[in-house]
Image 1: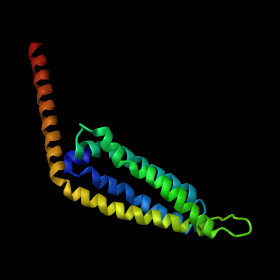
Image 2 (image 1 turned 90 degrees about the vertical axis):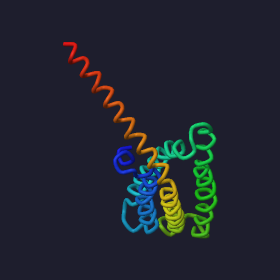
Image 3 (image 1 turned 180 degrees about the horizontal axis):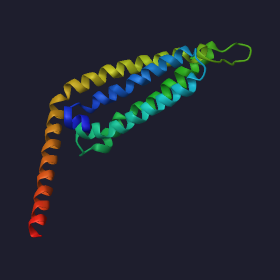
Image 4 (image 1 turned 135 degrees about the horizontal axis):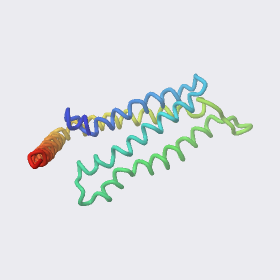
Length: 171
């Protein structure tokens, strides 16, 4: 809210910014060269994904309004269900089976999941482009929101300033 109030930076911009570490971490996980990359990469991907979820709520309310908020929020979050079902269940499973040895059906490391993580990074890069497009197209809306916030803060500041002044004069 500070960046929106002070600089007029739209929330979809921050959604894109939170995707940047996710892209880097998925690419790092795709290589799997460093020990512990699974733990560090999973931590940062989870952290960024959590910030995306928390940014989605005010973004949906600002872009679409509050009248049908529940429906709009669920429609914008269908990517969670689709991503879990298609990417994790179907794609990752298929690529794992493709790379697993025929004897033991076991596969370890980036040989099994590197392609999947690279596909995730590619999809996030596309989503980053869409966030940039939404941020560009929603600039007039966020200028109005910024002006509203500034006017609201000025009114509240003036109101409490007058109240404090009247209390001071009473003494």
